[in-house]
Amino acid sequence: MALVARMLAPLVTTMVTAMLMAAPVARGQSAPEAPDVLVKGITTEVVAIIKADKDIQAGDTRKIVALVETKILPHFNFTRMTQSAVGAAWRRATPDQQKQLTQEFRTLLVRTYSNALALYREQVIDFKPLRARAEDTEVTVRSEIKQRGAQALTLDYDMEKTSAGWKVFDVKVGGVSLIAAYQGDFANQVRDAGIDGLLKVLANKNRQSDSRPKG
Amino acid sequence: MKLLQRSIMLILVLLFASGCASTGGNDPRDPLESFNRAMFSFNDSVDKAVLKPVAEGYRSVLPGFVRTGVTNFFSNLEDLWIAVNQLLQGKVEQGVSDGWRFAVNTTVGILGLFDVASEFGLDKHNEDFGQTLAIWGVGSGPYVVLPLFGSTTLRDGLSRFTLDRLADPVANVDHVPTRNTLFVERLVSKRADLLGIGGVVEEAALDKYSFSRDAYLQRRESLIHDGNPPRSPRADMDSDDSSQLVSSRVPALARIVSGTYPTPALLAELAANAAPIVVTDGEGKPVSVGIADAPLLTRSVGGL
Image 1 (cartoon, each protein chain N blue to C red):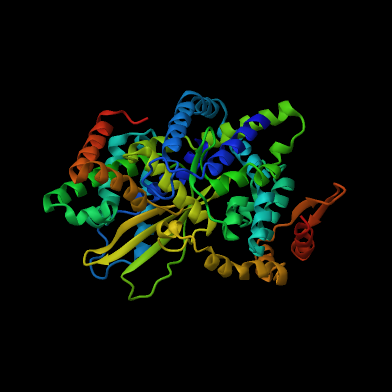
Image 2 (cartoon, rainbow over the protein chains, first blue to last red):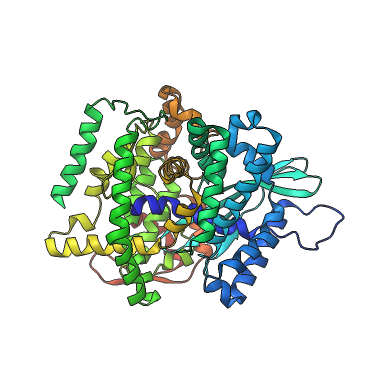
C-alpha cells in the first residue's frame, strides 16, 4: 500500500502544480504569452495566494475549488482532454453525450486538482528551460517539485497553441499522464456498460464527492 | 521478516510457475487481475485499519524537524545502492554524484539526518535493481500486487526481495529487535510522508484498482528511463522484441568500460559549489576537503 501511495504521490503533486499553472488574468492581449512564461506566472500567483490564505491552508474546500476555477481551469482545453481520456468511444458518442462527458470530467478534475492543491505546503517548484522552436504548436513545459528524502517530482504540462492562447491538454506527474491514467479507467466502464454507463458512473462519482466531507 | 520475505518469494515463484494463467483480466499487462484485485483490497483494508492511523499518530506526535530527520536518515541509507545501480546502468556521472551524496550526508549531514548534499546541488535520484534489469533489456513480466508490499511486476518484485534486499542496510542489521524496529520505523515514516495522497486518488479514480495500476506502470516506465520514456509505453508493453532494446543499450554498458569518469563536468560543478566540507578518512580522522581536494574525494567515492 505504501508503495502504491508512493508511486501515486507524484500524481498528486503534479496536480498541485497543474493547478498552479492556470490563471489567464488580465495579461496583455497583444501577443500570446509564451507557454513556459504563462505556466510559471500562474504557478507563482497561485502559490502566493495559498501562502497568504489561512482558510486554504486549513483545508477550506470551497475556497480551493474557487481558486482552481478562476486561476487554473481557464488554461485547460477540457474538450480535448475528455476526448483523449474517452478514446475510441468518443466518436461513437452523440454530441449531447460528448457535452455531458466533458462537463462531468471537468467537475471530476476540478475536485481532484483541488484535493491535490490542498496538500501543497512549502515545496519549492523549479522550472526547466523550454525546449521548443518558435513555430511549434505543441510544447511540454517542464517543472519539478523538490521533496525531502525523495527524488524531485516532475510536473510536465503538455500544451497546445490555440487562438485563445496556450492551453494545457495533459499533465504528467512524475511521468504519470493524468489522461492516460483515465484512459484505462474509462475504457473499462465503456466496455462494461457503454457510454451511458460511463456517464452514469462519472455523475455518481461527482455527486458522492459532493456529499462527502473531504478526508 | 525472513518468513515474510520467503512467503513473498514463494508467491512470485508460484505465480511465475503457474505460467501466469490468465484469470480473466482485460489488460495484457495484467493477466493476474483477479488475484491482484483481491490483494489490492486486502492491502487497502490493512492500510485503513493499521498503517494509516499509525502514520497519522506519528505525524501528530512528532515535530516536523524530527520527521524530516527520520526521512532523511532512511533516504541516505538508500543512496549507496542507488549509486551502484547508476554505475551498473552506465550512468557514471550520476553514480559518482550519488556516491558523493552518500559521503557528504553521512559525514557533514551527521549520519544522514540532514540532507546537505541537496544544498550542494547533488540531487536525490531514484534507482533500484529492477530498473537496472530493465535497462539491461529484461522485460517487466506481469503486474503483481503483493500482500502488504503492494504494486510491483514480476521482474521488479524478484529484484526487490533478492538483490535490493541484500543491499539494504536495514535488512543487514544483525540485532533482530533493532532491525525490526528500523523496518517498522521506516515503513511508518514513508507512509506518513504520503498522508493525504490516498484521499486524492480515492476521489480521482472511478476504479481505484485500474487507476492505480496504470499510474504505477507508467511511473515505473518513467523511472526506468529517468523521465524520458519512449512514446506510447502502452504499445511497448506488448512487444517482446527485446533484441532491439538490448542493442540500443550496449553503448551505455560500453561507457562503463571506456568510462569518462571522473567527469570534468561533475568536478566543475562541485568546484562551483565550493564550500569547504569536512569528511572523515578511513581511520575516522576528519579531513578538510576544499575545492583543490575535490579530485581526491572523487577518487575515494569512486572506490565505493
